[in-house]
Image (cartoon, rainbow, N blue to C red; front, side):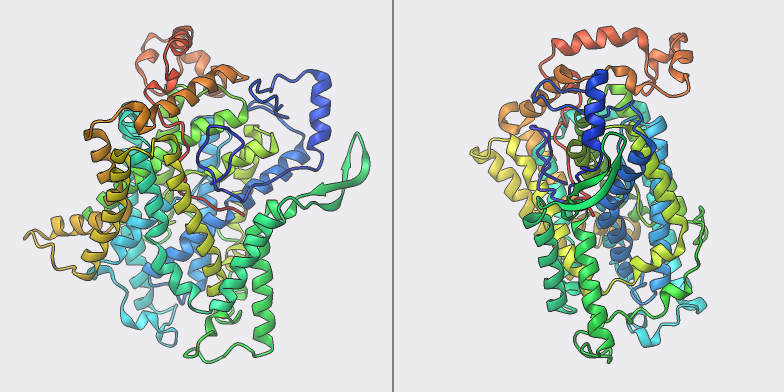
Length: 621
């Protein structure tokens, strides 16, 4: 996720931004005449719409679709990668159901987060932080796919035996995620998140996030190697659209009340570079398929690039499907899986705290107070609980790429994100949509993954820019954490019998944790950064605190934007016990909080130094 419009947001390298040129300028001029308060004094940029503003309905729909396209890359990648560990490589219809389910549940959780959670315009969706431990769990000897499931000619997707093979695995994933999400619910709603984040700095975040991308190189390599030419073409097209052509506008007809029917410039290459790259490569694969240039023999190189490999999935998929909790059966729980998912949950929480601060900055809101952050993390925990119950095989987190889009479009209205959530729900119930995404040729997806996980890796490293990398201390902490996190899991994967404690359950827990790269790197970075002597400036904590203070100075709104909806805050404010509830806003304490912020070097972020936005869901469409 991205070069952001914020001067202090280091999460950048995200290049799948979206630009709304049609009609936004006209709306902004109209607001200037009415006197808009959405202005950031630091750079003179004026937001067209702030958090609580409601844009015209047509602009809401257009921007909501853009946010949906931004989340497309990560949202479809997670179930497609997960399908390998679930033994679903040759069951495209079930893959399409997983895609529908993750869109549907993400839309529901987005509505819940914006309405009752942190109350900022922030999209919710699947997280790569849980994908890594999931794949580690599914790679254990007892969960490895039977050999016959790797052979398409031997797989009967409707046979009870095959169905039991993959449903057993996804039910275990479901239960593990649901139990692990209770940790996030507890930390969020209890207010512990503020205390825990005091000890998490860039030297913990950088290796954790970078290793999410690096740990998937083997899976990506297999997909790219299915046809190097097609994968290279997809990669080149995405780079061309997102980097070289992104500033080239395409004239399109537009209409506004001020200009009536006119021609406007649409930066289509900047809005949807991945979608365009996939579409072009997909079409080329189709031409090569109908002309029989690509081999029809499954044993020959390049067969997976054919568009007819995945059968008649589009015809088999129903027009409408309604995901529901327990659709794959009763969830099961694996103790080892729970601990692995908890490691991912911790990483996801750290990411989201940074996203909240970045989102507040982009949308003209003040830095989120403690109660809003606690509520946001708690609701994300509830979201992971729901996602697990629905059977996505994943949890939920805040999408940083959508946060970056706010800074480009200058529209920070949470109404737009609510509409986007509704749109995602609609896409989730359209079975044909999921089927279309499930039939993308394997090398085309490999070309997209090549960019996606490379950007995730670089974005994690970008967190180090607030630290002093001339310090031998910091170089040691980061280098040792990264290299150890590559060596230890690799050794244990090749020698699974080394861990023998005599207790099967303990062996399973240790094997999952120590073969999860981001856990090993994150724990080593956390331990070394907090035990080796170093100044706050050297560790990068002062830079994050300074960004929080500046955000509070230049914010356009008040903390009322974080109040609960439907008058709930007003009703609760008269109750004396509310001040002791960490996730409830209490109006009587706001003036004191504001004065404390003005005299504290780290502002409200003194307990929440994560101003840097962590990136795990990097790419967008």
